[in-house]
Length: 290
Image (tube, helix red, strand yellow):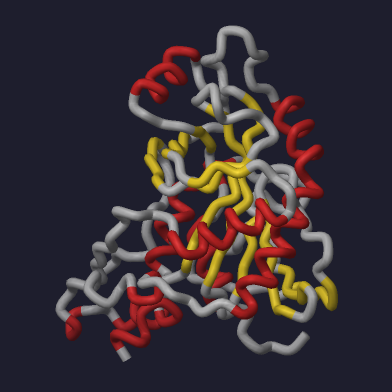
């Protein structure tokens, strides 16, 4: 591999700490103004297409959802040249028809976290990005098609609520989330999706249903054992779908507005922006601030 930009990035979640089929692998340590990413990104190729892989919880799963340095992770991928990010995530189903073992490609996100760093901005530079559609519709469509190609059962669309964790829900909370219209529940989509938007990257999630959370009257309540068992059974599907997706993205044009998310979002008077902030955020804002 060379040091040329890598356009496709994959963030592996619970149960996916490495990517099979990634060849010519190199570690690409990246320093960021926000600290270290969860692990050194791995850069290689899938059937000749450059791909970056980052383990969200670190190899060996040593970082809790609330401890993940989401800003450093997204910033590191941005520095590598990544334009399209695919997130792999375990989730609980809040609907009877969304069964364990199936894949959801959500199109909406409800942030119910409490203690996370939600933005790259601040310290003298203010930006207000639009997140009415928090997932890239184009990338999500390609991802759903790739899951079908790999033989998986996929549901297109759904409301994904992110909770703080690391504990699972109470029954009262699970029933409340259902009443709010949520379809699935996880612990890592926020603020990851919003930071990807600030970095003008396409972002889509392959959410693996592992359980029915705790609301279902006749199904076993969620546990780590249940989660890992379902993810292990789905591992081959995930790898095959990712390989099919990479092949699709290698020839597809980026036909969305994600790469211009900051075009009308930066509100601070330009001559008042601190030089240090401009320097630190240069990978994100240099095309607008020079």
